[in-house]
Amino acid sequence: MRGTMLWFNEEKREGIITAETGERLRVEEAAFELGAPEGRCGGAVVTFQLSADRERAEQVVLVPDVNSRRARRRSSGHR
Image 1 (cartoon, rainbow, N blue to C red):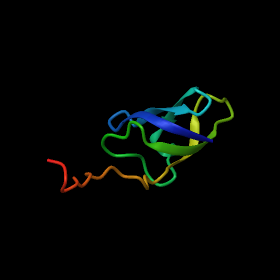
Image 2 (image 1 turned 90 degrees about the vertical axis):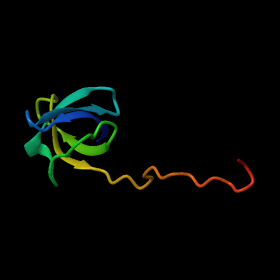
Image 3 (image 1 turned 45 degrees about the horizontal axis):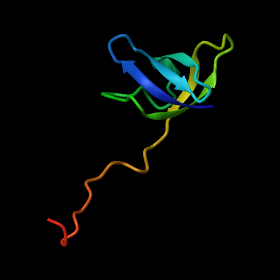
Image 4 (image 1 turned 180 degrees about the horizontal axis):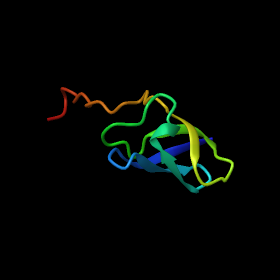
């Protein structure tokens, strides 16, 4: 499944993911395959599996942002 990170609290080691279906799922630090996010992660795209109880995300992987925001170059004709 795919979803979006709403937030992750590094101190509490847990966060919330919104699934494509609209469900909000709890995610614990140990559920991240390649390590939990650090710093602000709201809006980060993730892939994951649904737990047996269907309330938690497991095997979570952050999807690399290939369209990272970059400054736009101004056209020399517009000032």
